[in-house]
Length: 86
Image 1 (cartoon, rainbow, N blue to C red):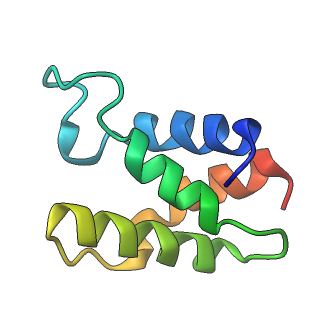
Image 2: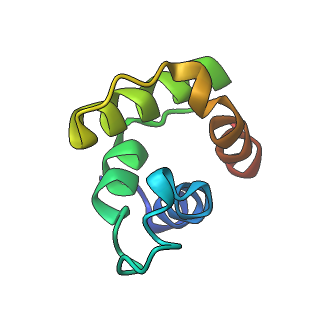
């Protein structure tokens, strides 16, 4: 289980990414909480930005039945990595 700080940082950046524009179109503020939780459990010190982007892609592709390449998630992965100081 990730610590609360990791989850909150991941949630902040995942919500800001607003996949599919769901939050902007009125989805509840907890729309991406399960994805953020799952991402948080897989983030470990020493992971590269590309590895974090791959984790995000795998989770979002699985949960939203998409096939986005990990490169689509590089900006948010870099923000998460930088804020967590990994």
